[in-house]
Image (cartoon, rainbow, N blue to C red; front, top):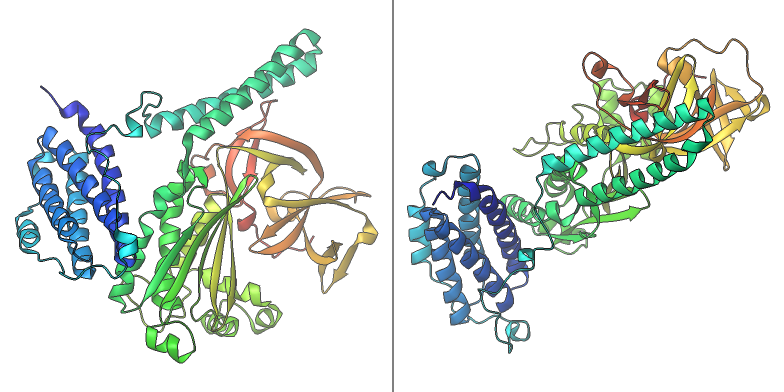
Length: 538
């Protein structure tokens, strides 16, 4: 029987078991109990059976020896310790590497497992009992290993990610077509089409929502790898660090989850490398010897906030400003005008670093720039709070999805441009008396705050209005963490649009994150507010 057709299913199931396997090991190291050992045993047993069925003998053999080791620990009542966790993680890493080789279609070129297998066979578990028997006792019989999993239910099916991506594209095109039909209907004043077009719009919204739900994945899908990352890096740096993750059940679009992994890895590495102190330094400062990193996800309507916080050294705004002056990135006058929050954002400048030494994971001045660039490309923003000696908190604010969005359409000279609603704090309509000029720059007041005012026509290089209007529409947005007003010619209203990436040469345009087609066939550019040049007064 040809079993190659089942390879994709094997890879998917094997990765699921291995992700859970590695995650459980890290949990077991900090909270040893018999239940964790049994769960590890179940995953090793399931992987062994799957690999044997597919005739991947090396994977089956290695998983079998891991299963035997876990059975010895479980049946002998041994205490899980760092030695056991280390060798289990090595086994999990080698199994993951072999699954990756199989996924690439090179099942005959699996890496050698003989050396690690022998070490597992020779491994002697610790003989002492766990120090917390109340957490290790179990009076209930374990469920049979052959019982069906919930994923075996026929009420769910597996769909390739590429298929979901294509469905989003088709839905976006349908929404664009619906807007065009509605525009034609209005111009033709055909009353008979109003009701079916309204029904079409309703059904398209339902279709969009269902497809987005199908693409949504819980944050825990990517967060499961972070405890292992922090554990290994902390041991390498000889630090004691605990990672707490909250909000893992909150769901994001698959595309955003994939893109946000590397930025979060940068932030976690920086926290371990530079944010948190060694145990001796922490105790001298009156802190607990074990440092704490928290990774927290929360949702507010159509946005998600991801916070990476630590209770370490914190960032010194004065030191950041001095470093920026030394690098020639800001002038003394600009340095004097910076607030503490604006000074903290300096760390995101390309090549910026205050690290005394360069390690293999950080200190080269590329991490935070990469974090900000990725977050901006997703239509999000980054903010930083920090206190010297107390720690730092990095907050990434992201949209739930980036393909079909609600946008505010504005007119600027001959252009119609779209601002994502998630990037707009509020809109204003100003008169001449509402605008104050100071040192060649213009400001307006809103909610008791003075907001710099820029002309969008100058930022985009459009010709200015022939006559000064009595009322000036303003889009208030947070640009690089600072509230800024953008004066426009007119605000046309809110519209749902399907955002497409720009091809060459339009992809080289500044200030734009994509394009969309309106119902009248007009092309609009979607503004990326974080790339706007703030050097031009209104």
